[in-house]
Length: 366
Figure 1 (cartoon, one colour):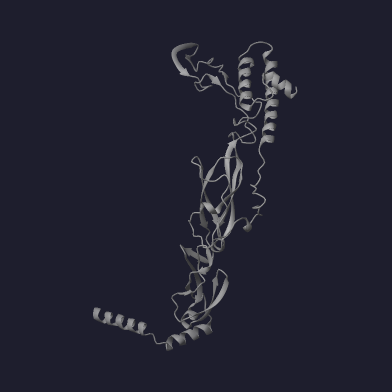
Figure 2 (cartoon, one colour; figure 1 turned 180 degrees about the vertical axis):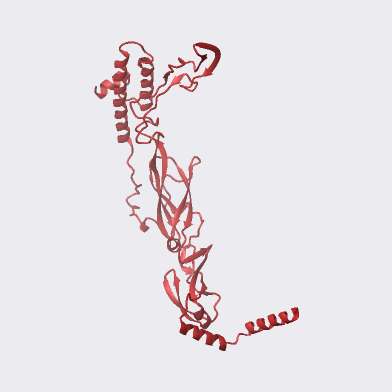
């Protein structure tokens, strides 16, 4: 049986669609299935119908796959044609308005979160974001069933389509009616249908529906919304207008901490260096610098090394440096002797005053 004979067997034209093919198959199944039609030719005719429907489904799937439009990036005029990357937009004016625009009253709202690193948010970047949307499976035409299978229900042979039968006690049938267990009271028996291997029975598949380039300005904050002029639509599988609401999400850094526009860094420092003062290395967005710290440092800030102003990467706020005192885990004998001698020679008025207060409290209590 070839394709033309398969269409003729189902009574279809070569330009039919999957829904009409499925309806014709169901109609012929209700007419020629052996459980319904008791004629001797019913079994042979049903096999021909199954083969024809399988060939028709395969032909329609091939035709739909060849009709899927190829995803191509939008092209501009020859005078305004640019390449991909940072040259596709003007850093002062932003992206040019898309020909399709985003101002339709029937636009579909697309909400996404744009993941950027701390350095990408600090110095600006261009991120490419794409979206997947469900579409009808081209192999099973959205039914979720394997092509060429018998999906229609037939009359239940336990209750003969009534959905219930009389309760029997021994050889006698009493008048009370109970629901049929074989068909769950529906009167129709439907066999298990093989699932479509492409969509796994869901009838839906994921497809890339759109792709946009998003411009992230220098100094963008976590949770800020991307402006419409900074979004450029590159690819759209269909012509449905969309309105994009993109939110910037700045990933956490293992070194820096960003709280709104306050950039800070915690630097571990030994207890001795904290008491004596000196120099220490502080990481910045540009690398590292040496900073002189005073004695008993509680915190300092480094000028022009913090978070940039929005859209102005050369103008930065101060970087806040927070010291974290670190104590030695273990001491050798020589270090212990040195620390004991230092403790005996040190004059700590606060500790001496506390000891005198405790002694006076003990004497008064006695």
